[in-house]
Image (cartoon, rainbow, N blue to C red; front, side, top):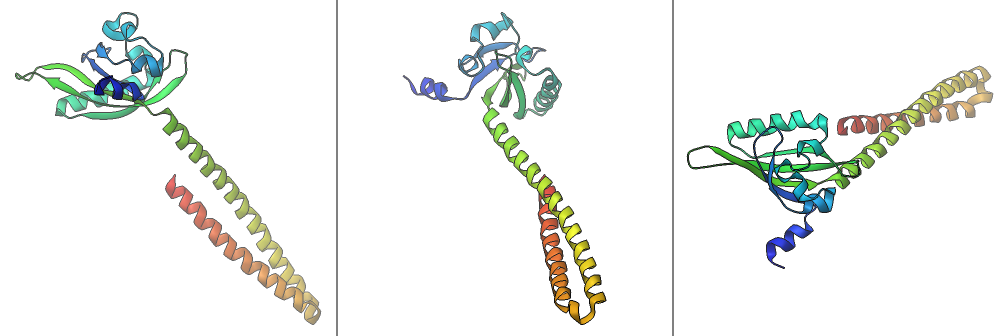
Length: 199
């Protein structure tokens, strides 16, 4: 197997060349479109059975048009993320890097680039975000409990004062409860603030 074929067979996506038209009519694609997304190349090239935009998430098409349009105006490459519908119906997140190709007279000939499946990356990010949300929820519960502990410590201090010398030991305990609650609350708030900034 030659170098190019070997590398392309390992790619978690595909290379393409297409027209700069409404449907991004494909002129050529590598077979990763079938291997990763389940669509035979000859179904999409030339819009024979379906257009490329028809397998994109409909909500993402206007964003793609805008990004590609601005890049072509500035003659720069683009990179964007969007969703492609697998032929079994579920969506996969992809990242695309592409650019325009012009002839010597400055006429736009076609667009070309690469589209790579990054669904696993998005799943990992979602899992990490879910963990952060769960931690934030637990932090809020801790803060609520600490406020209750501080209230108990205040009440314990009042009762100790009423008991006079007989409640001296209880007063020390109440004081330590307040100190522990204050220190723990400060730490919990720092954690909550860090999570908010990270989010």
